[in-house]
Length: 113
Image (tube, rainbow, N blue to C red):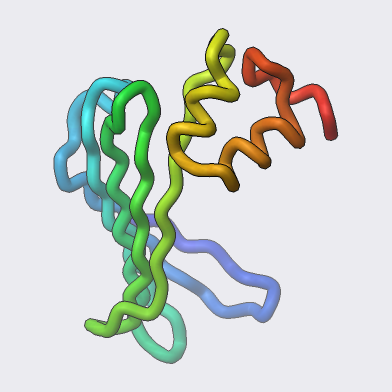
């Protein structure tokens, strides 16, 4: 299964989505995907892994050019609404708690944009 689209610069990119672990993608399952796209200068691949991490979901992604890893990202998705949202955010670090308090109420509903 693949699809292509055109970027603003007019390049055509072909996308291929391959499910590594497939199946149910609910909050209780781990999954990994690879998305490859072909650009005029070579092939890029994004590898994404989503796994359960206590009550939250942990996301790990990496960007590869040809065979070279050129970037990575790690993040946490907290379930909302949650009565202990601030406490959950604090468990993962002060920066996440700061963001939670900046944008969300104590239940995790976004109300401060």
